[in-house]
Amino acid sequence: MIGNLMSQSYSSQVKNFFLHQQEYISNQIAIADGRSLFHEEIWQREDGTGRTRILTQGKVFEQAGVNFSHISGRGLPSSATTHRPELVGCKFEAIGLSVVIHPLNPYVPASHANVRFFISEKDGSDPVWWFGGGFDLTPFYPFKEDVVHWHRAARDLCLPFGQDVYPRYKKWCDEYFYLRHRQEARGVGGLFFDDLNTPNFFDCFSFTQDVCTGFSAPYLDIVTKRKDIRFTARERQFQLYRRGRYVEFNLLWDRGTLFGLQTHGRTESILISMPPLVRWEYNFHAAPDSPESVLERDFLPVQDWLQDE
Image (cartoon, rainbow, N blue to C red; front, top):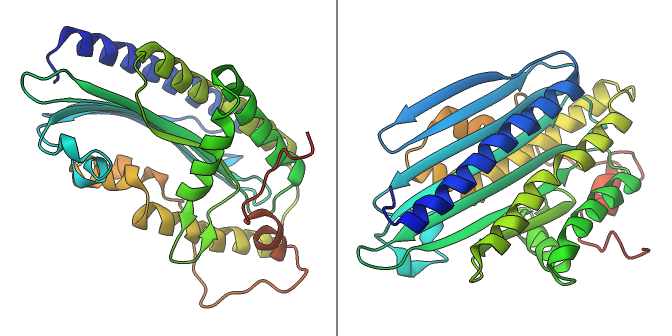
């Protein structure tokens, strides 16, 4: 672990907050589901600890994972040093909280949230720290009012930190959650930020806290509104097909997945983000003007969802 007393204080504050939020978010998801509870596994290795929570076969959520981890190492992997080459070979600590939700009803969007804190140092040098995180929404049969509600919540939590924060991190999210091999967005975005390390630790920590606490309410609002819509095998099959895009992104492009695998993390916890059921279909194209065509035509193209406000 990083030895500097200030570094230890920073890590302790972040760890305590992330653990508290894991408890809160998992409780909120279980209440919204109304049937299933989270199964918890606490794991420990020489280089770190973690607490994995997973809900399966729920009434509302087919699978939901809320994971906490705190690991350390003697050298950051390439997924982290690509953007910080000066830290190659440095020892580090990484503390993270990740939420991935796969609903049963195709009219309820999937969603993901993540917050993370890194601190690294070379022997005899001052520590370098930064935050990252965000949240995004992945609908199958989307409703514009839901997407506007989602982005309004994202904008409102950003406003105390500056007028430019939401547009900047919304754009970063659109660019990050993009399947380059398909030239297609994964969903309708939200917020994404990384390498956040302005001189004041507490400003950065405060923003990260607000992103974390601002995730569940707007998402569960959408869940409550859409969870009882009747659906057929047709909608279910389209949902499973679109889940394939989620898998492709996480395995090919996601930095967090790559970081976990490159640091020899606990594979079951890392891959909890995968949906429990998924399918691929060769060269599928939704029929023009069908309900399935709406997603790609009207929602996946990047746009300003709040332009009318």
